[in-house]
Length: 255
Image (cartoon, rainbow, N blue to C red; front, side):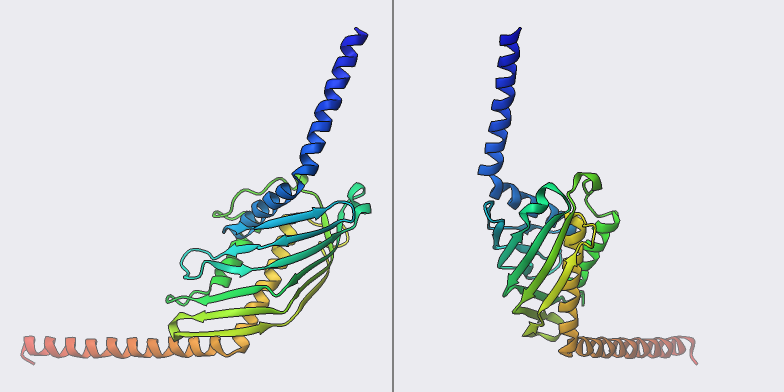
């Protein structure tokens, strides 16, 4: 019996050891898959990452080539290209919770703003997707149970030197805008938040700032003027058609 118990213990230890080895040797791939899964679920578009490098000894990490695809109906492939992302994890928080990330720094990201021929904005559509996913809307994928997701706090989030590449199809106009630095403190609050909730908060902020930058460039007013002009032409056309129809009717009736 003792030998059997010893064998069982050895097998359990071997399985646990193999599992730990798999996690630590495949940690980068696991984190990459998690980012793509949570990101795609939050935005309801394809989120892709080229490479993740985590160094457990000091808690540092880099995420390279993170892109967020456009919703359907837009020319550009992506809405965001976040380039290189630096992170620093507070290792002492891993055993306490919530997990504290000291910093997330994003340098020189690109935001691709597009107003299509139907005068729909890709960032507005993406914002709607994020809101729908958060509320569990009809088009949203079912999120993981809140209890299954770890709680996180990002003590300092910074997005710097960002550019907005704007393509306004109705105006046949393209321009490049600078996005002011975004600095956020204690994302997730005192008690932390799930990765899905933090993703929503961060993407909400970036999306709204990018939309504001486009409006400040006067694009919104020009589009509104274009809409008004198109509506006036439509109203004039309707009036002309109505007048001709009345005239024909009079002729038919001999009046």
